Length: 267
Image (tube, rainbow, N blue to C red; front, side, top):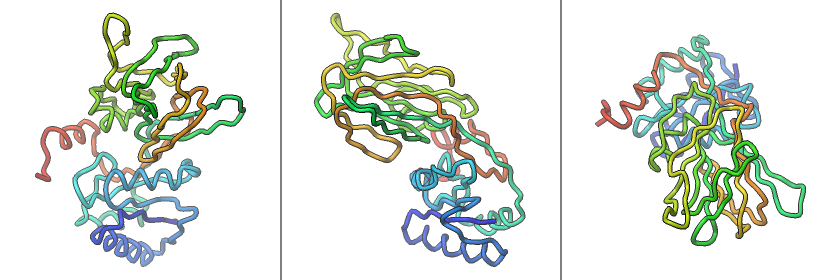
């Protein structure tokens, strides 16, 4: 089996990375950063997002596992003191693979056939380079509303606990193949009106944003911040690809929600 390690690059994470590499190679596993079968992320959820984008071109061949060196994360659920137990489980191939839905983001441009397509594990946001974002929101090819406000956030089920939750969106179980569209400070008065609620779209639906006036937008894809100019449309849908996680023990999603937002042993 081949493995790779992504570290948050702080002293504790780097020390754990060196131990993990030493232990795994002692068990006969091969350190291969080009084509790993399993990727250890040591840090937090942000570190795992970096690992995901690093290997987003080989998602069908790689599984991720996270060790947190800070607060308990939704993706990083192993503790540093459990490193030896985790290594033994990896060496014994004692795990099953689960997969979570991803978000596909496609950006089309004015007067060009060029387009960019990205995969997001958590969310993508759109904001105007001007003060107010004005976008026509189309659902399955039909105009749904004209949005005016600070921006829009489109999230995956596993990413629904991140920025989406902070915006007042719903928490979705990652077994649901869907995406969620959530508003950022929409303008609602006698003249302008939006639905004012998050929209949950199933896998066979899509959301397309079309600029009304401005053509330049700040688009985020997880931790990546991208300025796109002369935008014609931005399409969001559930991706065909999925992210795969190596699961060594039961860690129910709602237990993670409880531990992260209600009560935690890490206080």
